[in-house]
Length: 328
Image (cartoon, rainbow, N blue to C red; front, side, top):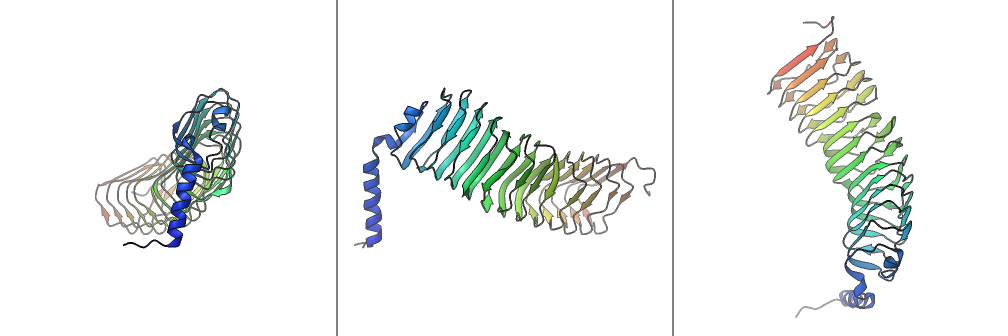
């Protein structure tokens, strides 16, 4: 006969007691549309199921009492909602989404520490995004079309996907806690002059960077798939710790770029494409690059090309420059 420890028995009894105490209103998939509907679950510390608030006509909503949701929390598509808060909410086991609210000014989640996914999208009035308790466990984050100049309190060490796009007032973003990203890093079309840094990020799957003033990835060593840089404002791109790219690297239409440095890069598993970077006069920052499994396609107005270690270009090479001083 299996013997149960006293601790296991106490935990089992506590779980049963909690389930009995919470009542039937604390489980299922519900669709509240008013503050009164939310008050009906304020005694549910754990809500077992999902909550969908769709097209509410309320201006202010507060989810009181609930500390954990085992499914999703989705608040979406309201032209009236100005403020949403969940003061006790610590954990959302599924997706947490606030999206499509044209006048939402406040989204207060002071206790939140964990969510499977976080989406804050199409919130053109939202000026502050913060997680005072530290959102330290989250697999994917999408922040799109907000008025916020920065995000504070986001602190996971590993993530799958991070998307930051169309935040026109964003000036700085620090993702310094993240060390590994198994999916996509997508930073595009944010405010002019955005300074983006992920100073401890060592590995990621794929990345796209567009419209950045500064990019700081000092310890990045491996990109499993593609990485691209388009229409950025920085003058120097330095990824001296990067050793291998599994897919294609694209560097295009960066009109202020004058210098590149990839001192440790030895292999590109796809293609290398550098084109239309009008101020880039020398392509010489690839001193250790020895293997490119796709094509090398270089185009622009550069005066100098140098890849002294290159030995294997499996897809061929095209070099085109408008420079009158390029040595043939």
